[in-house]
Image (tube, rainbow, N blue to C red):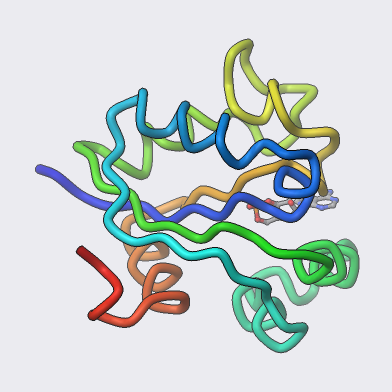
Amino acid sequence: ATNRTFTMIKPDAVENGHIGAILEKITAAGFKIVAMKYTQLSKRDAEAFYAIHKERPFFGELVEFMTRGPIVAAILEKDNAVEDFRTLIGATNPDEAAEGTIRKLYAASIGENAVHGSDSDENAAIEGAFHFSGREVF
Ligand code: CMP
């Protein structure tokens, strides 16, 4: 079945000029962009989006990083979207990411890792709805 995932091109990748290259890899891999915006998270937004990580030692650093500049948020559609997108982006830690993956190519560290990809269909729906209204999804 066709389904969806949610992604963000994070502030590090935007700062380093990788928006175009990352979108090219995403569309070349067969993902259709059904929603997209260029935006910046407030501290409150980031704390809510990452609420699941609230107790982690890196939470403060994560919120600081994700709010420091603009991001690209998008909803992507493809068969097996969540799993295939996680394969495309590679491991959370770029040192462990496979050759050719987006994080291997564009990420510097486990914290500043260039892109987000939802980890389940349920979270994809929650995260997409966090950023987009129904009128913004095509
Ligand atoms: P992501 O999987 O998109 O969402 C949670 C984020 O937390 C993850 O990307 C990393 O950017 C960040 N993260 C995970 N583990 C660590 C860590 N050990 N140190 C710093 N940031 C981390």
